[in-house]
Image (cartoon, rainbow, N blue to C red):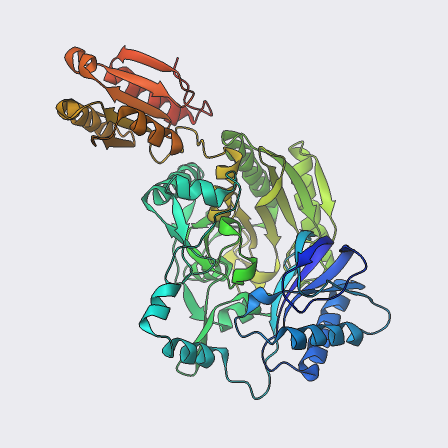
Length: 572
């Protein structure tokens, strides 16, 4: 049995129609609950009442930690391929519902129905976790998977190697936009993981390059650390108790290793390689390494939730007296960067959760310093009660996209606990050793998620400075290909991201292709342009200007890129 547990503000599901022959008869056409723990439950072959009872007892303990009284059982077959027969699965879910002790409000979503689901998750670190309840005699999942693949014939294996099909999604979905712009794809053999194409890699590098340029102005160091480490690292940091079910874990000899789901423990190891003085603080350490989180493929949603992600991560080590100045600097950087992307945002202060490490006095002091920093900056904020990280309070920043949705991206977390757990010290002005405070921060958050948001926010029409291809040069006929190629070389030498199309397709086809790819500018090379040594330029707005110099077009594009203008490629 596998269960994805989600702590939600609210859940609502409409029953649309039965999708299998075994389904619950329903009186109501929907189910809803608030302030509840939702168990997305997958019943596997061989599961029994003993396992079902264990799963409910485990969930009740977790609910007591979260101080929840409502529980919703939600049939969810997407967590496994080793499913129990529908009749058995339905019966076990009913048994689990009956096993919930009195004093708790228990509901079960209808089994066997196609549903329209809407939920609002809470934002704290324990808001979602994956649980697995194997039989005592059950062969390990690893050996089952190996045995299953060994039995596959060549044609069966080849049939599984295919691109994920997103047909049926709206044209505004980032997965559709990303494929149309040739940025990325998803493949069935790598569920929840992105295959970045060349243009997607360019877009990622533009975003990383932008924030790197800002970090260099603020004296950040950049490090890179191994993806794999012994799990003692996360046991010491305290992450193991909260994140182990979402880690990729393996064994080398008789040692247990895990792929890193976060960078902070590795940043602490870097800190410990040197002796630091109060004169070195604040010490700003950035890290763009990939992270690995075992999100179940059934809950992955394009770029919004992936198993391999990149964060614009940073850890700032500072003294007690420097905290407010460090927080203010980060808030200024958030304001600058989100302003560049024309993003409005809402700021929230997340306070001490029930499950935490450290004394209440430390938490109160840390929370006060975060609120002081925001008040001094004139920032209005909301309180998210009990939704801080397990090691400290945090500022969460939700951005608003062009269609009114909110996305939590930036976060600033104040940590008194982990530096002490790792024995971090610096030499103070008094000659004594002191423990630094760590500020964890991201601004993009997950780069993958941020790109997905940007694609939908701009509806694929990325500003010129962000566009992987800024200009496409089209020749009208083969006789003009030489002049088109020379023009292309000028743009490349000037640092403009340019494509050249000298195919034998019609001009109308070439223009339509460039429009579908949302390329900001198209240069059209005809006989008049060749004879005059000039070009004609067509903007994404459809307007065209004829017979202008190559140099003036290059100057315009470089100016737009340098200013990071949101002007969506208008020709004036």
